[in-house]
Length: 140
Image 1 (cartoon, rainbow, N blue to C red):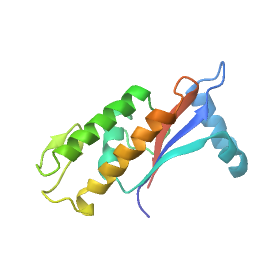
Image 2: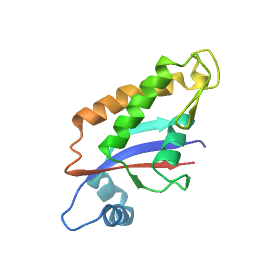
Image 3: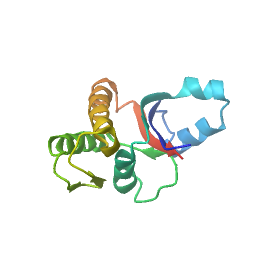
């Protein structure tokens, strides 16, 4: 077992809130569920990224729920990941992400930061935030 993290999207529906749409998705069969939403980004055991979402999106509640994420929030995460990448050799805290060492080994989270930067650039370029709900969720 471990931490699996997802950024997903579903088409907005007139008169339906994000909560109503995600609740409805939870009630669907697996096949219907797969057709009604899209996974747009996936992380595995990227604790520093998960921590950012918990602090900045989930109001410090780590409950594996569905949390809507705005384009602006993802832009902020992207910029913060770029800062972490640039300053990775200095052990310092950047908005909830703690870098724990002076090397760029996988254990320190460098690859997760690089993959997050690449993934978020693609998500921000390709996602129509006006017509889609985007959310983060995780499972342990």
